[in-house]
Length: 335
Ligand code: CUA
Image (tube, rainbow, N blue to C red; front, side, top):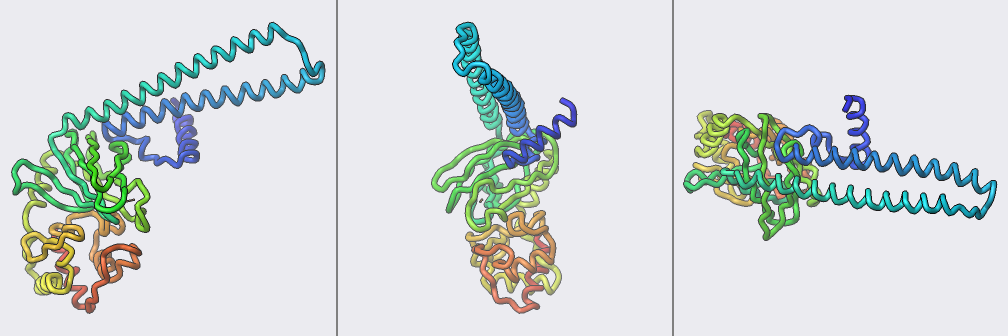
């Protein structure tokens, strides 16, 4: 297919279906199967549509010409031909629908097969409007809980077990795989294998309330050794702050309400309502993919969470400017 045709088909697809261009640039086995299926359906659908419109145009032209001659012509030969054409069309429709159904089924099977080879299991618990991520391990001390960012090793299938604590959300990494819903009191599974390193955005794909658009994650696919060192670093408790301002921030965090909702392993903060912040500064984004990680974003988020994500469960804590500065200075040490 030439580049021009590809662009044309793609832009029609985006205009008609609102689908993301990411889907058509797969970087993982699952997404590649889905993209292939989308191409086949789009091309066959386009050919059929063009044929139908073409036949319609011809038929309209002929009808007008014929009506002028004889309003009720008797054409036994023509009718036999029409019957044959309709029969062939019905047969072709049956063949095409059956073919596409089989193709869709085999793609589903190949997606499921990725999960069968998975050795790494990650649990994702969605809630309005963030993601709790738990890396399972046979050794209990190596079970890791983090939030709003997933790291996976390139080339290795990873099994995700999905659930929700409130409403239905949907887990979707367009460039790596298809979608799977996160439903309260139910565990769904999806497996993903990234074929190339990179950072892939995973937006929540099911409307889940006011801040649905501000519920995303970054999926970081990296080489096996980088992934292992990330995991080892994340397993460590939080570093003790060295600077006096950050030390003051740790105290403010523990005493002014933050610790009621957030855990920072290695400190007295053990709340489970909000995201684990043990290594919050190592993440790329703040507030579930809403702001890029920086001092400014952290300060803005803590100062006015309702201004950034109206409706969020993160309350506005009444901190003095000095206390806010101290807390931010502490959080940025949590790499
Ligand atoms: Cu969670 Cu949309």
